[in-house]
Image (cartoon, rainbow, N blue to C red; front, side):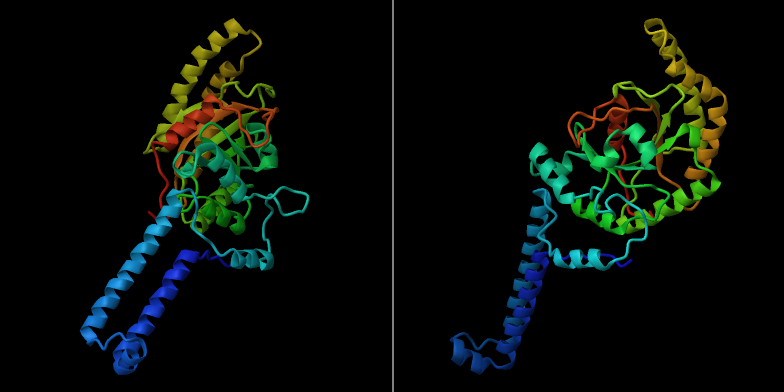
Length: 360
């Protein structure tokens, strides 16, 4: 699938002005008498013509660069020719299933997101809002972020969740190009990979996750940090989005051994918090049950999972793991995400880490 090259009107104007300058300079240099008689300017010596043209070209490029930066700071991605991109979308065959393939399904619109965020946060929203790409099977994602698979994006307090489809499918290049247009340079601040504790990926599925993530990073031109979001159906579905999820943040140099130690510390913390929770609400034993499982069968399963994801040539930049009960109630307003402590923990960690270009 060929990449869509987005050209700016500003760049085209500068290019045309450059070639016009070259043509005029050639006329003054090659036919000085004719130009002087026709325009009243000149004749000039070659050194003077060369110096003037060099200064003019440098000024044109500087003005073009400053204008482009001014558009970026204003919350726009430049002035774009859209016809080429639309043509590419219409003739490019779709090779994987993603939201919006069928006419009945919603289609992600970067323009709608940009317009909403500009209204909410101002023209410089790109510096104020964290963009998180949520990946996973739709049935599992619905239990972590209800309504997201239908809305395709949801806004919280200073962050936006964007549904990116199933991570075990080939990356959708058209969707990734829309992300790049939404915010150039740093398309997303982080990736949330949603999984179910009861159905952790097999060896083959882990390999697919790594390969497709590496391919998507290459197409996006950006490698963002990843957080695992594990939904737990053992405690039943929860109506309240405020039901606190919990988890661990590994820090900048996360390792499999360090993650195992972090889970052990989390289990002790959950045991104490779970006992206090039972005293207040005897029927609410979710934290205590998770603490027990982190010491038993879940400990080994997570060790295998993280070992496969954090090691190798296509290893993820895994920052942490969050555990949450299954949620079944979406926000009352479309494209809104209820704020929870777990989302805030991920957003805060985004401030401590940045993405990077693939290969570094």
